Image 1 (cartoon, rainbow, N blue to C red):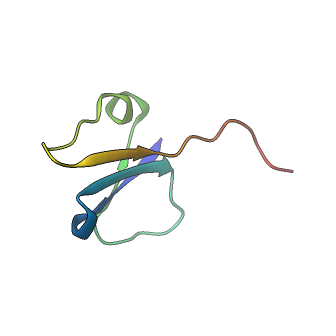
Image 2 (cartoon, one colour):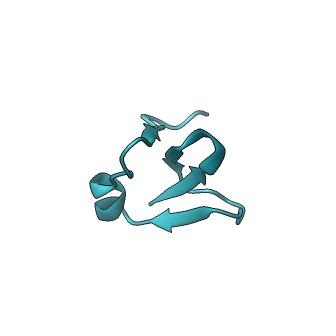
Length: 55
């Protein structure tokens, strides 16, 4: 699961770890939809990936 957040002012879609809080312009996506995500022309996608757990 991932959370997608749109930053309209910067024409950016940010995809990161599942958020613990509901935020405006944010949407939770399953792994399949997160992988297939595309952005409108002129927008960029920023993908934050978590590689391991911090203890």
